[in-house]
Image 1: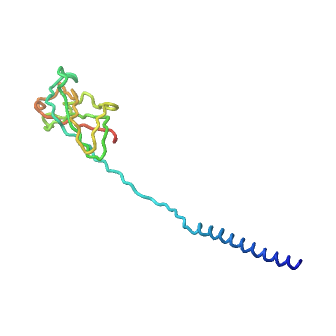
Image 2: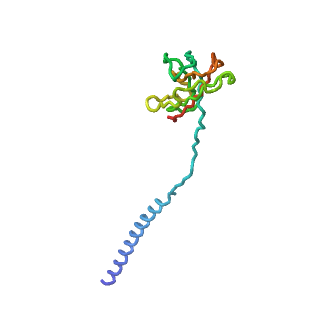
Image 3: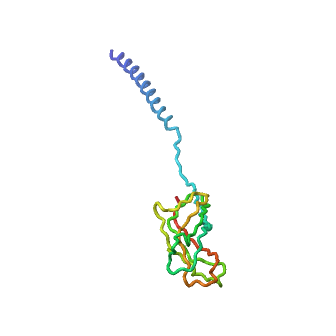
Length: 176
């Protein structure tokens, strides 16, 4: 019996080793296949560019309310001294203009009518909030009209009579 037992134990042990070996081969072989895939990662940079802003253009729109020498800054007719202009925005974005600054009127003939005879009633006009002037992208605004914005000094020389004055307008605001 002891001989049989040894033979039987040997065969059973060999079968168990074969089953265990096959199971391990399948287990590690399957795991090896899962790790055979390549992982990927990377990085880099891209670029963006900014628009170069184009200056706004102011174009006069005559209002037909000429000024004349006056003591003080206002006239009996509040339309006297009214100026108008349009604003052209050639940028690809809209702008909101909140501050307008008016300069002294300049006559074409500086000898006959020197600068400083037609003046703004108010130099800086605040248009922030709901009064802001919004000009759409690549467009021209409707006329901006400033009622009673300029006056002529009482001491203006006769050379100012009939002159047309260019009133510088400076605009500031932000893109929308």
